[in-house]
Amino acid sequence: EVFDRLTSVAKEAKFIAGGDIRLNLESEHSDEVGELGNILSQLTNRIRSNMDELKGYSEKTTEINIEIQKRIIVLSNLMQISTLISQGSKFEEVLKIAVEKSRALANSETAFLLFKDDVKNSFSMKVADGGKADYLMTIEINAQEDLHNKVFNVNKLLILDKQNSLNGNLTVDFLTKFQVKNCLAMPIFLRGSVKAVLGVANTRDNFAYSKEDIELLEIFSKQIAVAIENNILAHRIEKLEIKDNLTGLYNRFFIESRLQDEIKRAIVYQRPCAFIVF
Image (cartoon, rainbow, N blue to C red; front, top):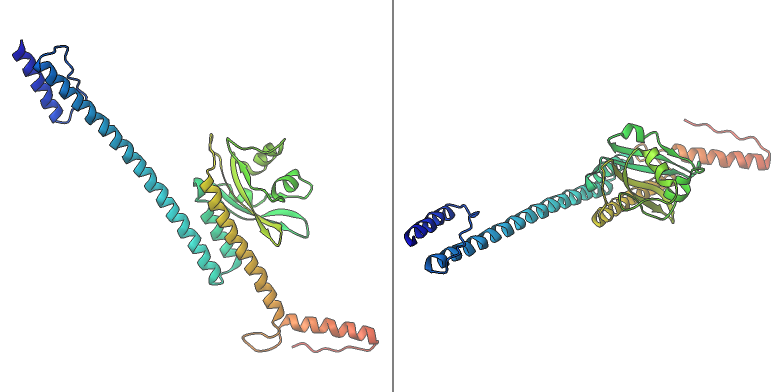
């Protein structure tokens, strides 16, 4: 009987040595053979526990590597936008690239940029990227709408997901107008007022935005704010210049302003005014 039990333990020990750690060798006998089986069983359980722990570490390491790669891609995108701004690229190109790169946040399906028209006091779509981009470009939010006064034209981050919603019927109005289920939108301020709104959205169920998503979208919005400010300053410089850099002649803006001044002066002094424009 002892020999048979010893042979059985040796056989199962060979399976364990071959990598099969699912076996359980605990014995009801209290002799040396039973103790050997119990020791092998404890060793198997410890190996199994260590293997599960290593598997968990491996999965966590994989997740961390994926997150690191995502952060590297986002930082690369931010560097690209900064380079475009510093090189004086076209304003529309900078906005297009910024919106396109921001869509990588939270694996969004759509990214958009709303611009405020100070004359009409309304928001209209400036750039849209991703799914339903053509539809989003048709969106306009008038001053009479609650979305204008209570959502976009305020100093407040917009978060719509499974954990956050808007007051009253604003959530329904927003989701109906933009045709999405989740949205994260950041207001872009210029001289104390909202000039634009940068947003990312998707149609996934049971989705929630993280703190990192909010922080990264804020960085993108600040870069767009810099691009807008640079564009305004560039137009002001153009107005201040009176001569064309290529020909050295007075530019059209200077000639028109001088013409208006002479017309006003002629009206005041009641004398004829003549101008020759080449």
